[in-house]
Length: 556
Image 1: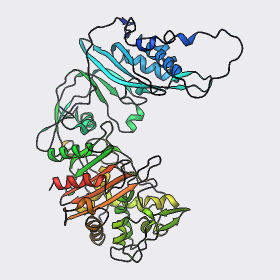
Image 2: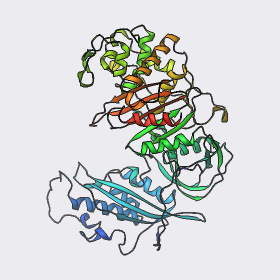
Image 3: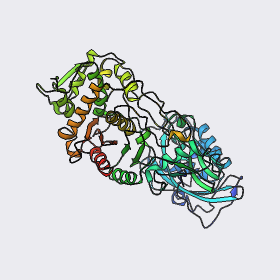
Image 4: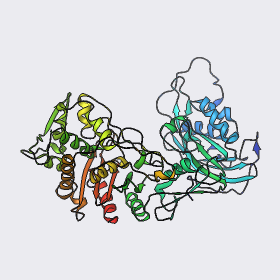
């Protein structure tokens, strides 16, 4: 069924007594015995100093003993149900006290056993084994978590750096754990052929199924069950994160939701992203906007739908449409591509400082010449690119309704050097594979069709629209640019054998702190459009390109 994701569950052979009706402790040190040999346990460092006078505030890196003692103090108190003592062992006692109290009171977690692993510097992993007990329902709960010890600046005391993820890795700060009637019935998601869509079959779709349940659970005809779940707080809601099931104590009756997913393409997408770390891809049908596949190699966050990354040179599709519209460029017209261009105090370079002497705009697009685009910044208004993205490509308006949460791209109004940078997909521009697949689909179909995963007819929602279409002149030249790039430019190797009815654009986006750029690739072939990104992977043609091309080839 289309249920929220669950953590692994495990049983236990013995059950310690419940303390205070909340959390139990393992008598005899079974869980914390590995560290109990050091310094007499958690309270050993809490004895007052025997000497008088002021002591210097400890500073510098934490010692192994300090890390071990601080972690043991916190874990022992938490395990024994001493919430105030555990909270006092953190650097945010108020927040810790609230979540640890709710762990027993609201989440109904009992019989907690915490087992620390070897510390890695200041980080201490630990396992949790417990029981979720609500009314006459009971199920085991087991998962791994970790904490980090920090030194408090005011007195040098080692404390646990408090975040909600210490209690459970699925929690963000401000989230809570609750056990009870779910309120939202489960859903059984179906693909376009009527087959069931599950996270077990398609691991990438866990977050998608969460979103489907949240939006359609109450209207799909199901009944709620009893479960332990993550209830998202204000910050998580703002980030469009859905509630998440951790343990299902009693099954509800699912309603049915049909999606537009293609089982064949989804299976290929899952395999393709699994071959690379931090890869994401989306496949669309340009003529309708139907989403045929979505996959991420990291399953905790749906980067494909909700990521906000600089798209690099794939943004030049939108910029090119703007320049052609304004008569500042034409596919076969000579266009400058110098080694560098300075604008707004920034010097912009091409990859390896290449230049194209006497070349056409088509040649600059196909080779992804940054300076060909930045050189036109002085002829543009600050809001020109924003208006083009919104009015023609339906982006940056936060109004897509695809059936699950999305980030709909951001092309803010900028000035000077930042405006110039946005022309080449840097600066403040942010996109994800869903957005860039839609851009390619708009070029292929000639008009923007808002992507969707669930038909708008299901809940009578109104899809987003664009206020104007590309002119016939601009559209034909834009297709020529992308076709030439797929045949003879930076996308040619990945798109080999897929022509002639095709088009593509590569991109690489530099990210602070990364040795390699994020590699982007967006393309269309026939009535398919796709886009992918491999974070910290390198050039798009080499990284995301093969993923996208394989899906276009599979879809025929």
